[in-house]
Image (cartoon, rainbow, N blue to C red; front, side):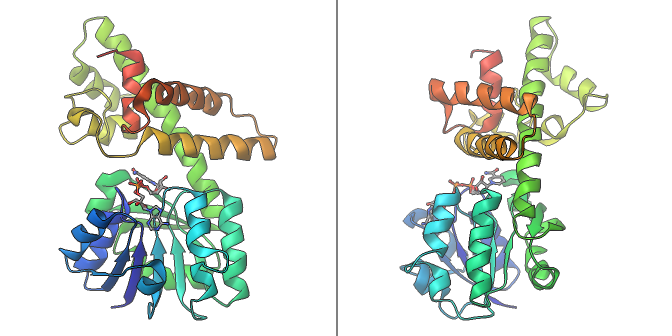
Length: 295
Ligand code: NAD
């Protein structure tokens, strides 16, 4: 069992840290939200007043933060964790950020002999709670092998996609596809319902047919079809539209830099931006259904 510091206890980080506590690791947590920290402390984690205090004496530091600027603020600069962490401390960043930011953190970590991997996740809040996340890692194989037993406490499928930043590239591709699939699934359901079909029956038909996809399997966007899905609780919690827009922005920037055409991804990005602009940024991303079916 290891001494692990977990920073960023939101929709994803909270249940991930909780699984580390349950597995018997000594977990010290830090978040800007006192409520998020208190929830973990009630499960057996230790708390700290600052990120530096939380990381003191840690064998492994894990971060699960909203975006690149938060990761930079926590790790880089004179006040960042990398300035103080001892050589050899394993550092894992599971936030979804740009490959460039992940490489910048990796470069500074490597200069200080701190093994670092980018390890963004897929699987949603349900996967975080169940400990069945997919981790998509980028970094040296030796660091990956060190991190794997810890990641296995929180996930089921652990991939090494390539060098530093490769985990983020694979994650960005995956989330662009997810946005396209969620918008497409919402569109198909709305068309069926306009024709008088029961959305639950149509979902079951498509799930077992060639249109089957993750949204239909575990994250149905139509309210009431899937009890555990955010759609059935007013699209609260889950993966926020604002975070999906951040990821679609990362895909778009990356495509521009690499002269890659992403017509479907660009359309999905515009749909989700339109949706956020109508006041839905803090809802789960499956609320894109509302663009097709005003409630
Ligand atoms: P969230 O907004 O629910 O949680 C982020 C947490 O980080 C918050 O509790 C916030 O207080 C904390 N935080 C921000 N800045 C901090 C700082 N400087 N120090 C300490 N704590 C800080 O976000 P989330 O949904 O948990 O997502 C986290 C990351 O995981 C994002 O990059 C997101 O894109 C990615 N992700 C989310 C999902 C999902 O379904 N929610 C799925 C896969 C990947």
